[in-house]
Image (cartoon, rainbow, N blue to C red; front, top):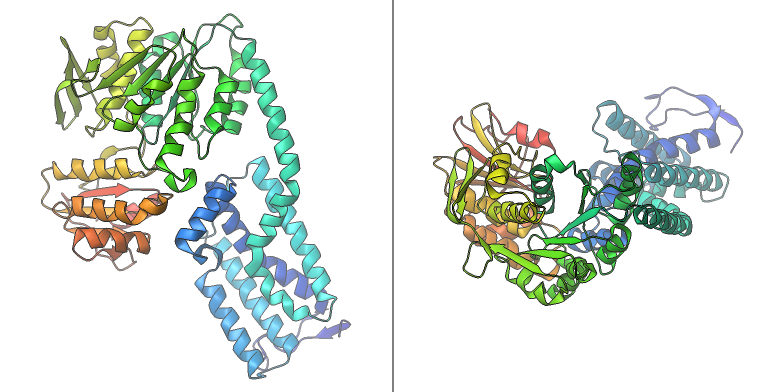
Length: 530
């Protein structure tokens, strides 16, 4: 069976493919590897977006099922192969070769047509994916030389398990390297005792607040974590690199965005960075499925406040009731900002104009080219930190006039005559509600919502999507959801049909408003433009 042979028509249909003088085992292994490469890269890309975390992956699987693991085309081909086997339409070997050939052709087409998702090729992604490919090679070779070579048909469908096996094998090494990096980061940080570190956490608004504070403190030459860097490992690596560029006696501000999905992660970030100031932007329901309860989420975010020394200071968003509950965690002084009487720094006369937000604090007027009244709290936090660093309110107001809004974070722009609110950097219940509220105030005849759905809400998922649907019911004439389950829940509150986005959707009219919420490729937004 394994000698060199001519294979008559791989599809078993009398010469659709001509005979190929090649070793059958080599051909089987090669086809299996090529057929497996596409689903392996797809799953690696998806898992990397979940930061290679089992808890986030499990939550997604529980919410969405196994759809992410299997494509419709591959599943259809498997069904056809099974039918061919059941009805003995050809020999087992010819059916297997035909099936693997079709899978390999489909995989190759994904690469050639540039439809194949890839992970960002970090060192971790390269090592994990490379190890998985080695596993594939060994397993394909073993199956080909066994009496159950037909099991090769399953290999492209278990790439999630192959990648998980690679992750499990390398986990001890990964854990060791992480601990080593954390120790190195702490050692480096201790060599800069005069740095003034500002830690920022919250369910939403962390990145915007970080950029606002960096802009206000620009003349002090602050260092701040880059985009998408807020995890323990990301911050540790950045800190080691960033501190090489400054003097040991530097008093520069160091602004650190701190994200977390479970307890002790922010505490670990604080052990590494040693913050003097703590900023909490907003506490909502984001990642509630991972924390398990609102109380656990508050405790995890509160680790930043508990780490502050008595000589430091905390800044809390008083418009968030859950933020206010964290006040008793502080041994340091606390400044509460907001738009109500409870705030020690209060914004009044709030107005949203075409060019951004305007408001007043005491006798000082502020104009910031940032949209959404929910961002007033983020601006107030930046002003409060600026004053703590000795800046006068008038100087801060001048600086804020030149702030550049973040790309894809409540960004308002016009393309091809359509006004777009692009809030696709991330999505939370609070930011989704803010986008709907903002859209309701805009003077457009045609308003369309495009959303991907909010993830990691746990038991709050159904209620949250229904409530936002109710809020949006009088605002949008058309709604598209990328996630069908989230769209169905939203539709229950919206009271009208929520459509899936397909290729035959008519483009929007010029002068429409398109509100985009949640992570999605820019090409999807472009597909709706005239």
